[in-house]
Length: 92
Image (tube, rainbow, N blue to C red):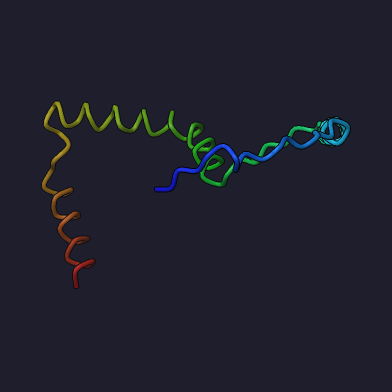
């Protein structure tokens, strides 16, 4: 670490304020020109939005299946055989 005396302090420079004012004015002109809003909706958001239309149908189906499970009617021998056949077809 070096410690220097006060002789290394430089004098102040004159500040040009007109340049800063001009820069601010240029920025405000650019802001005035670009006043239109723009929104981009991703494909994922569009897909989620379209799923809201489907959710009513699926909610009814889910409620129906829950009721079948609660009453013991969901797991039948036919459904289990069908599921096993599909599983074996997928594996083989």
